[in-house]
Image (tube, rainbow, N blue to C red; front, side, top):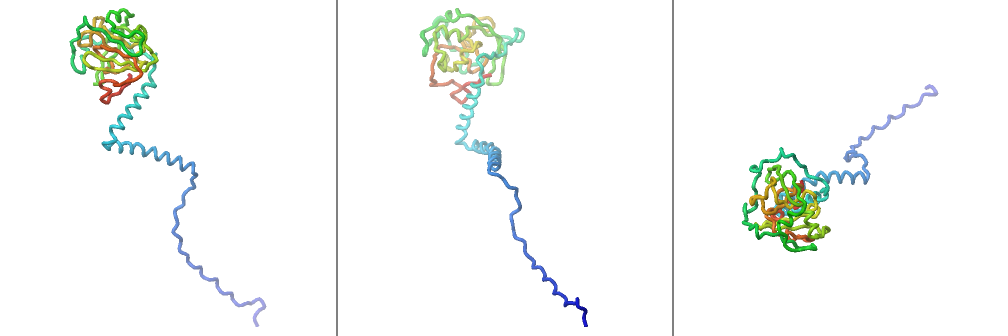
Amino acid sequence: MQPENDKPDAPPPPEPIPVKPAQSEPLRPMMTQRKFAQVSRRELLKVVPVLAVGAFAIPRFQQSLLKKGLAFSDWASARLFRSGHMAPTFADAEVTPFDKFPINGYDVDDPGVIFENWNLTVSGAVQKPGDYKLAQIQALPRIRQNTRHVCVEGWDVIGRFGGARLSDFLNMIGADTSARYLTLTCADDYYESLDMETALHPQTLLCYEMYDQPLTREHGAPLRLNIPTKVGYKQAKYLTDLKVTNVLEKVGYWEDQGYSSFYGL
């Protein structure tokens, strides 16, 4: 006889059926839509310089990109210009000797102005248009200043300049100083323009002296601009005409060839 608790052996459990693991994507952290947008913007900013360089390499885009970049630079410079901010001035001992001051012109060193017949013709938005003699400009308060002249070619010197504030002359002729620009033409066919804020700056001169002597022919006699807040090519020589206007048909000789129209220092 078998004991009461004896029972037949239970069958062994079935062997597990092997399951081939599914090919699944690797686990990725959850990302909100906002975070995805932030990452997208960040990645886009990384790509923009590359795209810009690539676009610049395409010849048909180069000119347009250059013009837009220069226009933005001029706009930003004009926004930063402060009419009351003075350019540095220097002691007499720091002034470059007169014979070391470079003579620089766009065409000729002397266009042959006949001083006895010279006048500055004024037109545009002014109350007193007409022709003004040098003596009338010299009758205004004379300002002498030792300031730096900076040439776009890469050199600079400290010179001593004398003349009347352009702002005093504009007041004398009854200029509308709410107008945007002054345009200037010269005896050597050079031409230039100034924004009104620069024209009214207290260091902007109608210059008829250098080194306490009458301006020489090579340096722009009988009258030139001296603007220590601007690069050299804005400082036109051999002035013959001045116009106050809101519209620029031409900006300047060099500017119309692609140079900066503001070029503040």
